[in-house]
Length: 272
Image (cartoon, rainbow, N blue to C red; front, side, top):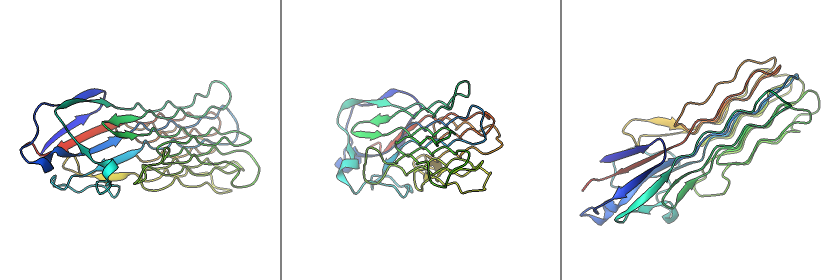
């Protein structure tokens, strides 16, 4: 097989078709940028984790590797049959972490990634820690909602994943934040939703799990949701580039939040 990996914008140029028509239906994985974590400027509450960038994959039967559980090949809209043409590639950047310099700010959502007819949606930014709670943004996977000081469980709302909807789903919902010095919700991931907070819990809540594929010849997991922030607060992690992972939510007392990871596009096909 031939494998092309795009970590930034580019062009997939087809100058000659394969001798066997089945080999012109190519395998691909398109990952969008992950959302940035929400922020807290002071306060005794924490923010939500960024949602993962949308995860879309289709494995042609002629390319021998183990695809993710989200392989959409059986559905015609997910297949790409190439022609002699240039196919522009767009790789979405990760969303910025919410700043702690003024007020309580949501994380920025990630940007879309595009190959041919396949678009993966950027992950939703994490909700800010605030009172009342700030919701996570919608996206490929939803951002987790912020936590808040006081009030009942479940007043925050995690962002909705798989927006716009595709099948198989490109992502999941963000987790729900709660009150009483508690963390926000984890960002949604490719295969599971972000973890909800619970009253009296100060530890960060995990983001949703990503999806593993061997399209590059060895298993790699992409599009995991970012963890929520915690109280009293520690700096949140930035997501690694070209993973589509969500950034971590900011913690109490203005502990910084994390940036989302940029996306990636991988194309694999038989070379003859």
